[in-house]
Length: 287
Image 1 (tube, one colour):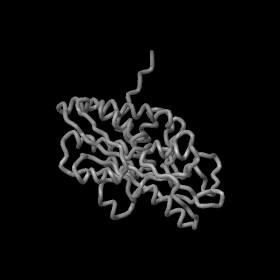
Image 2 (cartoon, rainbow, N blue to C red):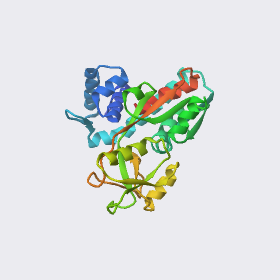
Image 3 (spheres, helix red, strand yellow):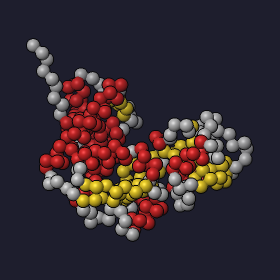
Image 4 (tube, one colour):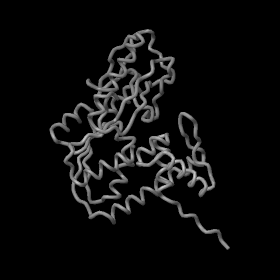
């Protein structure tokens, strides 16, 4: 007699994806509105059902086992299909337009899959996505040009009152050469126009260790800045998981460590239903 197929409990799957995304049981519990002990029991039940260890726990962090790495993309697809089906059947068909502003580098890496899942759930909603410098996005937001804006900001108490933190970025130095050498002269920087969080991070870090620097190339477009770095015009600053092929991460022995930055989601409060649903979707997807 054939063995019956296992039917997964999607609540258990959702807890696993939250932990895999956030790296902590505590943060996953806060995101899902549950007790940490409940999340732990759910993961134990899921691992028992699958007959595989999905997570390795340590006092400081949680990481995926090889089995967890293989299971994660399937788990994400299961939740995406579930959420799309629930949205389609439990709400009236939504129509309208949502205007979203986002930094270009964030839009090219983290947002495509997030927005694709939203469009699948709400196919009649049109998205108008504008990629620009944070300074320009904030100005447009104040002028009412956007419903939602993802903006880079300093992770301090004052900034925390402005928008909802949805992402945290570890910044790194990038060079066009595998071994960076600034020839004992000023460090040549490829940066965006002021004010720019990454530019500020770079100059502050160099000043902190007493390294001279000069701005060698200024460009507001990510593609232009990357091309300049590849051509050897200088070094730049990017989030670690956004470093493209052809650029090299400089080691801590070459250039000083950089402080993290945050991505915050801003809205005016009085959002249309499609805009509210996109906000909820982004928060749920990015954590």
